[in-house]
Amino acid sequence: MQTKRDTYQIITDTILAALENCGPCERPWMGPALTMPVNAVSGHEYRGTNVLMLWVAAQEAGYAENQWATFKQWSESGASVRKGEKATPVIWFKMLERKGDDVGDDDENGRHIPFARLSWVFNAAQINGRQPEKVRTPKDNQVSPIELADGLVAASGANIRHEGARAFYRPSTDEIVLPPRHLFTGTSTSSATEAYYGVALHELTHWSAPRLQREFGKRFGDDAYAAEELVAELGAAFLCARLGVSAEPRADHAKYLASWIKILKGDRKAFITAASKASEASDYLLAFQG
Image (cartoon, rainbow, N blue to C red):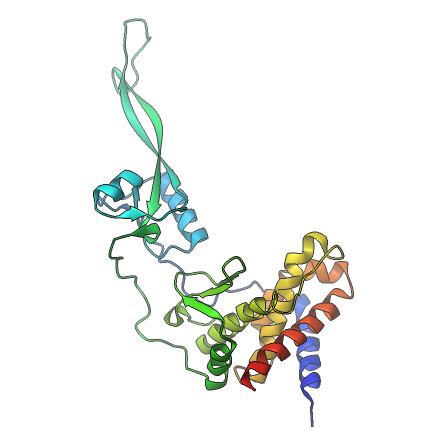
């Protein structure tokens, strides 16, 4: 009969063997729809460079809406920008009239020349006092509940919010943010259910770090972040196996870990350290089930 530690070792060995041959990492949920950004007041679409600027800003922040407006425009519409929100610059051109007779030949605009100006806009997701637009989502939730996994998450008492299109643990507020379940669609190697619980348990492993006083100091230096990510993904793999989310280590785990392969090649003991920390984290979390 295999012990829990045997399970950990099998998972660790399987993932390590797959690292060198895995493909690119796939995000297992739907992000914001790539729709043209529009001004929330006029309804006009942004053009040119502004489209790319706003797409990038929305992608990085996880905004699910495509409406933008200046601070003044939001205020005049009865809404307000939340305190501390960061604005995104957009460029626009104002036509200035040439003055004097010694300005040389006129350009194609006659006596007018374009003058570039910057405005600063905020996404609808950064606003209070406004009813958000309905976001396009899959019609059916493809995530099937897994009682053991849901029970563990609930028993942990972790503060989890389902919103936006990013997944992360925020140490400053001690909370986990996940995309809503209906956004999870899975990947080429995992179902939507495996994807959701894999991501949720990854972030829950991060959540365990301050409770277990898990820190990576001088030994890892600039790679400390990578080491913690390695622990979180191994912890998720261990928990997925123990909770019946997936019967065997999935290629998704190896694909994700490949992003941190540098630290493994630079320190032969790094993977053993990470696996040990991941085992400790999964034991800690499983204990919440009694």
